[in-house]
Image (cartoon, rainbow, N blue to C red; front, side):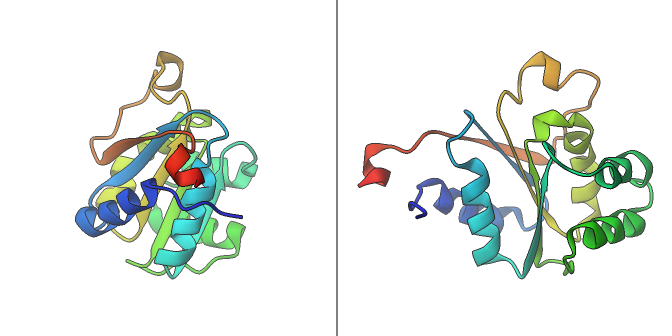
Amino acid sequence: MIFKRKIYSKLLEWKQNARGEKALLIEGARRIGKSTIVEEFAKAEYKSYILIDFNDASKVVFDAFTKYLNDLDTFFMILSTEYDKQLYPGETLIIFDEVQRFPKARQSIKKLVKDGRYDYIETGSLISIQENVKDITIPSEERMIKMYPLDFEEFC
């Protein structure tokens, strides 16, 4: 069962207002439903989506971020093939789940948003601690919102 979460309206607002020009970073404690709500949003609001969970992404995916960010056509072809998803410009959401596990992906947001083909949401916990942001440039192309555990109103 999926609970109706207040943050869903913020996701809709971001999609309408950002129009692909800003990524969305959702930060919150572990196990509060960040990944679940973002995937439900992707299913309902986009033609296709890819969820890259950096807890268990393949070496091929990690290598794509390391080797092919200067060739975005190849980069997106690798993601499309690895996740068996067709990507549609303007109608695909790419989700970086547990992005704190791979800060290079967060840094890539600047280039990916500038490319303009797809929308991006990043999720994670402890994103702002020094260990998870050292040696990367924090992208100005992301908007951050906090997500909190289910409140009583949402539960009811």
